Image (cartoon, rainbow, N blue to C red; front, side):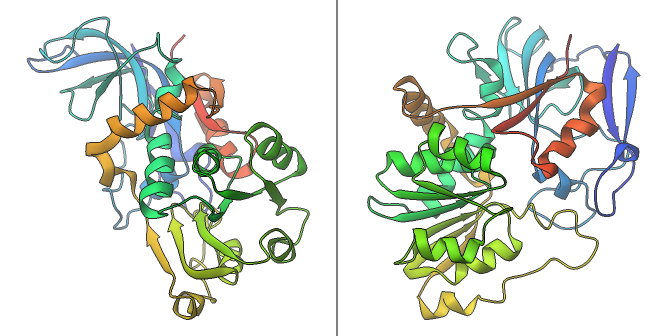
Length: 332
């Protein structure tokens, strides 16, 4: 049998246990061109909250009754597709379930001998690609830039800051709590970090970035984005990757009131969706993997177990009760 987490109710505000239903269904027989994957781990990402809304976005909304959408990694245990062999490990969008049947589209092979499987849905997966292409291609960082990263202890932000340091930038993080700020500076190598829960972000930004910022990588939106806009230097770049502070709003999303700073400073603000770089994932993974092998880039996964524990694990995305990439092990 295949345990599956089904999406059964569109949430208003926070998603809770009633948003999903755990089901157990027979594993289907594969047809010609298909493969069966025994999934080991699934990825939990803030973007999941947006996928639940019935509104236009960069990807179609999930349908009621469908398996909860998620990145995944696992082992091919049956194949009628010549491109995939039994025993091979692959990553793709398999959803929150223990077994996935697919035609292989969007899946790619991974090597558990080179890195632990969770890494392939984290630093060497979509998370890493988002960070790498977001800061290098959209943020266009260059040596000497002052880079500000919100959500700095999170999956994407932690990699963004490390890449910026590797590229010779001064990096300031924003995170929630003294423990996370200590992690960001002492373990990840950021130059400093602002504790938005206990410090005045505007005041600290003036102290840490007296001449302003060249790049702001935004994972949170809301008030922090608005504050960052007041500290832009000439030709600064803002990368809009996420807005986790706004995802569970029951009222209208709060937009920036300080946007005229873009005009005054001839700055730019651009959205970033990782799927736009799909043809370059191999390039990104190779570079990130090289930096990991050289000890320049640290990867951290917060791994929890049990498909039945998905709702409470998902909530850690919004409570901040984790560091690094959030992963759920779904197979015993």
